[in-house]
Length: 256
Ligand SMILES: [Zn+2]
Image (cartoon, rainbow, N blue to C red; front, side, top):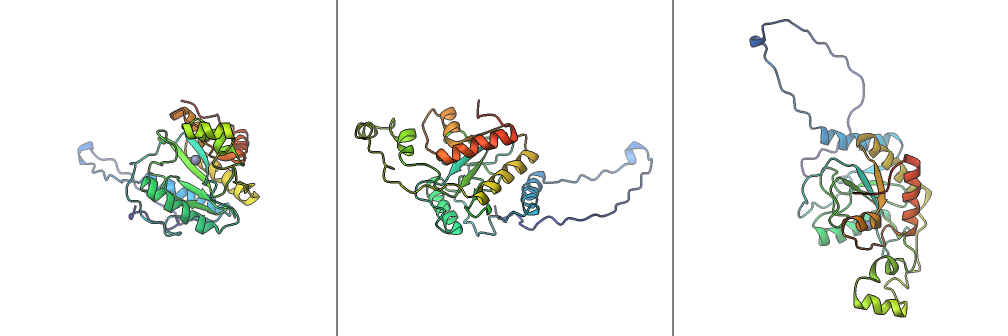
């Protein structure tokens, strides 16, 4: 999206005058003014979060690599899906490096970053994929759903196996008998820091002000709905955040 301008909207007041002159209809010349409301909305979300004191990095701020492809446009958002970046991520690592790592994984898997927003453990909100583009964060279920990823590992040990792998293959079933999931040795889990939680709440709240968001869920809930498959994402801590957000903003669970 090389045409996306990243300048902040300038705020301020100005006066304007209009003179209305009655004329015969055929003599009236009209001028059509086109306003790109999607670009303006994207920008207004950024401005709203910065005004609340959050650090917001646009794609050009963090020098995102251009996507190799696109899943097309999307816009009429009614839902929000929460993700965690996964077992190989950690709040102990540098946030910018974690974002770059997530970008690299997504570019090779999907040709573009899959989520719309990413939040680092220090509470920086990053534009991951331009909101005007369809995400790739839920298999067969992205339309109308904003994807937010917490750049952390919010799942507890054994969860990936229990939620996802056990039913997937014969190997998974054998592992089930042996109780040997692929994340059995994943002992590190991030309890999301307060700054990251505050940024998440602010982002969801701002999105509600611009879109008629009625539901919010964890990736695993959305995935069950779209393909019936299991997912560990967004982890046990992520699902606690999902419950908190639903209560705070009176949002429903994902449903068809
Ligand atoms: Zn996910």
